Figure 1 (cartoon, rainbow, N blue to C red):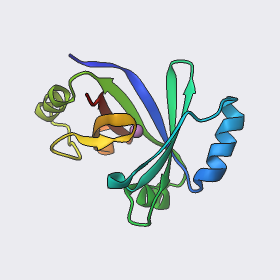
Figure 2: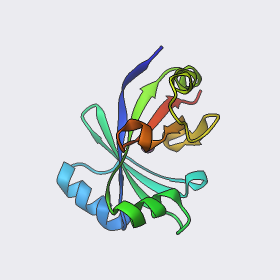
Figure 3: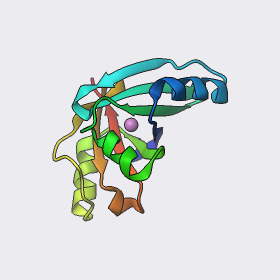
Length: 135
Ligand code: CO
């Protein structure tokens, strides 16, 4: 079991309403889902482009990790998410290889997924997400 494909790309935005409108016009499609993930302090808007997904992320409150990201780096690429059918095995593989995971166990994420993040320092500056559909 390894990573099968890029599940989505996450983009941090200051104003989710205007970003939704901008991306609606950019991609030429309506968003297919919107969801708050309270545990991460974010609200998400999802677009589909063929088989690929774009996730816009806005902060729900100033202490949200996305709010801190926006403060430090501004808007833009926030994370790349990879799909796996066995997130626990992938987390173990990465831990054994010396990667720093941001949680010890998978956490519930958007779109009914289990997720775990790898520290951006261990991925050339890109926050890396593993995700597996929850049954
Ligand atoms: Co994501």
